Each structure stands twice: as C-alpha cells, then as structure tokens.
Amino acid sequence: MKILSREQFYEADRRTLSAEGIPGEALMERAATRVFDWLHARLEGAPVPVFVFCGVGNNGGDGLVVARHLLDHGYTVDVFVVDYSQARSEDFLTNLKRLKGRKKWPEYLDQGSPLPEIPANGVIIDAIFGIGLNRPPDPWVADLIRHLNSSGAFVLSIDMPSGLYLHRVPEDPSAVVGADVLLTFMAPKLVFFLPQTGVFAERWEVLDIGQDPVYMEEAEAAYNLVGREMVRTFYRPRTKFSHKGTYGHALVLGGSHGKIGAVALAAKAALASGAGLVTACVPECGYVPLQAQLPEVMVLTTPGFSEHTELPDVGAAQVCGIGMGMGTGEPVQKAFLAWLEKMQTPVLLDADALNILSLHPADLHRIPGGSILTPHPGELKRLVGPWKDDFDKLEKALVFAGAHKCILVVKGAHTMVFAQGKGYVNTTGNPGMATAGSGDVLSGMITGLLAQGYEPLQAALLGVYLHGRAGDLGASRTGYEALTATEIISSISQAFLELSGPAGPDQKHTAGG
Ligand SMILES: NC(=O)C1=CN([C@@H]2O[C@H](COP(=O)(O)OP(=O)(O)OC[C@H]3O[C@@H](n4cnc5c(N)ncnc54)[C@H](OP(=O)(O)O)[C@@H]3O)[C@@H](O)[C@H]2O)[C@@H](O)CC1
Ligand SMILES: Nc1ncnc2c1ncn2[C@@H]1O[C@H](COP(=O)(O)OP(=O)(O)O)[C@@H](O)[C@H]1O
Ligand SMILES: [K+]
Image 1 (cartoon, rainbow, N blue to C red):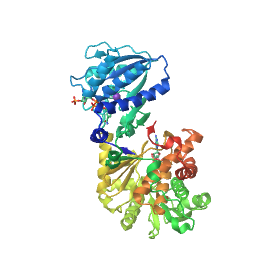
Image 2: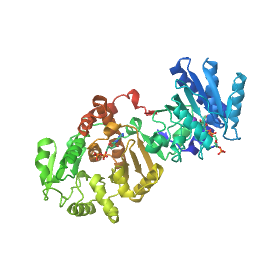
Image 3: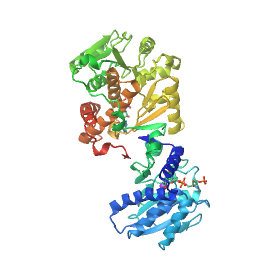
C-alpha cells in the first residue's frame, strides 16, 4: 500500500471528482458517510452524548456531514465550529446549510469562548484540522485541544488527529488531539509510523472512499508499506526438483568471548529462513558451543581465541552476514576492514560491523554496492550523526543509502528500509521484540534469504516482514514480556506457512494499533 504526500491526496481528490464528474461535496458526503457508518455500527443508537468539533475547512465539512447523519439517526449531538479562520471552504458552507436545514445551529467557538463541558462518557468527533494544517494552531485552539484531551471522552479523529502535521513534528505535542481511533481517508500517512508522531494515533483505519483507482495505481509514492500483499509479489515457493545447492550457502561471521550466542541465533535463523547450507565463522572459543548446539550448522574458526584477528576468504558461492557480537577491539577492526576490502558481492552488515565502520568513515567506500546494513537507532546515529527529529532521521537515512548505494534497514517499532531514493515501512512486529538477540535473528533471516538468490532489496523487505510476523505469532503464544529471540526463530516456520496460505483477517494492513 502506498503512503501518499499531501499533494498526492489533493490530486487523488481532483482526479476522483473529474473521473466521476461529481462535485467536491459529493466526495465529502461519501467519505464522511463512511465515518458515520463506522461509528453507527459500534454505537448502535446508544444514548451517549456526541460532541462534534469542526474546523472551517474540508475536515470541518466532514464533521458537519457526520453530525447531520447522527442527528438523522436520533443521536444526541452538539456541534461546535472552531472558528479559527474567516476563510470557510465551499463544501464546509454547503454542509453548514444542510445542518441548519435540520434546525441544528452549531455553537461558534473563538478566542475567549468558554470551553464546553464534556462528560467522560461522551464521544468526541474531532474534525478541526485534517491534512490542511500548515502552521501551529492559535493558542486558544491549542487550549481547546488540551481540553478535549483531558475530558476522558472517547475521541474519534477524522482523517488526521487535529494538530498533527502530515510532514513535520508538532511544535507543541500537547496541542495535538490524542485519538482513540483515527479513521483516515484513502491511504495511511507517514506520521502514523514514526515514534514522535505515531503516538497520537496508535489505532487507525484506512477508509476507502472510492478514490480514482487509476490515480492510486499510477501515483509514485516516496514511501510504501511492507505487508503481505507486497512481499508475496516476489516470494518464491520451493520447486519440486530443487536441492540444497539451489538454496545457497549462508556464512555468518561474528561472535567473541561471551557473545557467541549472537552468531548462534543468526545462523539458526538463516537455516529456518531456507538457506541450503549455513556456516558460522567464529573465534576459537565458539567452536564447541556452536557445534554442540546447532548440528545442522558447519562451524569455521579463525586464529584468535576470544575474538577474530583475521577473517577468512569467502568463496563466490557464499553469501555473508557479518558483525553480530563481533566486538570492536583493534584486531577485529583491522581484520574486518581488510576482509571488507576484498568483498565484491553484496553482504549484510550488522551490529559491530557497523560500529567499526562508524569509527572509520573514510572506509565506507569499501561496502560492496547493494549491501544491506541493519542498524538499530544507536548504530544509525553513529553512522549518520544525530538528527533533529524523526523526519530529519528519514532524510539522513535516505541520503546515506543513496551515497553508499546500499540498502539501509533502520530497525524500530516500524522498521524502515531505505534504498534507491525510496522508503519502505514495515507493518509487522510488536513491543515484545524489544528483547536481546532479536536483531541477530533478523540479520540471520536476511542473510538466509540473500543466499537463496533474492535480490538484496527483496531479501531485506521479505526478511523484515517475516521477522515481524514471526514475532507476532510468537507473542500470541508467550505474550510480550516472555517473547525471546529463540521463540521468534521457532515461529519463522508459521510465518512462511501463512505467507503461502490465505490471508488472515489481521494481515490486510489497512489498519494499525
Ligand atoms: N481527497 C481528499 O483529500 C479528501 C479530503 N477530505 C477532507 O478534507 C480535508 C482537508 O481539507 P482542507 O484542505 O480544507 O484542510 P483542513 O485540514 O480542513 O484545514 C482547513 C484550512 O485551515 C487553514 N489552516 C491550516 N493550519 C491552520 C492553523 N494552524 N490555524 C488556522 N488555520 C489553519 C488552512 O488554510 P490557509 O489558512 O492556510 O489558507 C487549511 O486549508 C482532509 O483532511 C479530509 O478530512 C474529504 O472531505 C474528502 C476527500
Ligand atoms: N517496539 C517494537 N515493535 C516492533 N519491533 C520491535 C520493537 N522494538 C524492537 N523491535 C525489533 O526488534 C529488533 C531489535 O533489534 P536490535 O536492537 O538490533 O536487537 P539485538 O541487538 O538485541 O539483537 C529489531 O528488528 C526491531 O525492529
Ligand atoms: K481531524
């Protein structure tokens, strides 16, 4: 699914109107009626007081339409116009007239108006600002928003939580509506997925408003959602006459005294993701534990006892993932940089491989084109420097991926993959995955997929998706707190099974939370 920009939402609007030959108010009617239907299906006529707060643009117009339908269905409704500007939109005015036709006169709020009383058992429809917000709300509007937030009432926001910009972080987070549910039109917005802005709308649903399918198909989105639908376009089921040679040889290099487990997790995850052969390359101290623990994995050791002092030459048939638990001591740094220099094909770089590169930015050119880098936020900061806010972070990640012709996998609640000027936002995973070793599992999975011949970007997207899904399936058995990296590996099988089977109800990715 595409994540559209503001210009693209407005263009989709225009294209829909012209394709159908309908006026704007007809599309507003259709969109807002979907919001009403959603609410009515849940309230079922319950006598709860509903408070509709409308701005004076098209988001406010949507609110007026919802208010009219609520009245027509016998709900108790109070309508407020938040009069922040003299410039009313045409469709807002059309719907204001229709509301008045129901003998319902809204109350106008402006600077100095007393704040309306809202009981905690009420429902607030937030239609103050939508995607048109382009500057901070006036102080009195901010006060009103804080008042709504502190009311304890259930808040349903239309299209956007009011006060949240589409493309930047709010100056004052207290002046953003905290939506219990957000019903958003046509496509999800990038802000739903960023830690600084996603907190205002943890539960959201996309409403299809019959937007022009031709435009939705042809719009070039800067960001796309990574969901089942997308990864199935390149997932390759196994074929009958294949053999283990068909599925490649993954070489996982890393580990140091006390951190051999990181390699064990990655190697096991590479196997569980379908690599035909897996070799783990560790310093001498890792030999016995790995051999004893992972009978399917071949173990190769390097001369150092507790850390790598040199790294092996890699055969053309092997695909490498390197860095987990490797350490960053001087000998390891030297061994790693010399090794990287010799690599010609894409590799996966994780953890200490990234930390070493951060210490040697002049050597970043040694990364083979098409390599995959999997930093968590701390590692990313060391690589690209600090960022001002989440949007600046995205920009820096895009620039870095472009400059080094690599695929940058920025891990987080919504892991984001950056490549070739585009961003991909993962939809799977859960807070239970914030646990030791879950990143090592991801590296192993992506290395295992690369070994099977997936293009690097595909391996990264499929790996990130399946990793999150395995985490979700694991957590459905263990709960968040008890989820472990090992449990995630055990759930990879189920994630693959699901991928090739029919879609479950929670896998459409038109909702979050
Ligand atoms: N396809 C679609 O897109 C569809 C969209 N629909 C709906 O339309 C909504 C977008 O409507 P919209 O463009 O009229 O903008 P909205 O958010 O109502 O803001 C109104 C105006 O406020 C102004 N303004 C901005 N910041 C301000 C501030 N801090 N303080 C004071 N004023 C401020 C700014 O005007 P300006 O003053 O800059 O000229 C802005 O234009 C969208 O979210 C969805 O709900 C659906 O009906 C159907 C399909
Ligand atoms: N709140 C969260 N929601 C979803 N996924 C998460 C969350 N927190 C962490 N993860 C995932 O868990 C993994 C953690 O990786 P990392 O920090 O490298 O762990 P480690 O170094 O312990 O292996 C990443 O894939 C990340 O996307
Ligand atoms: K809104």
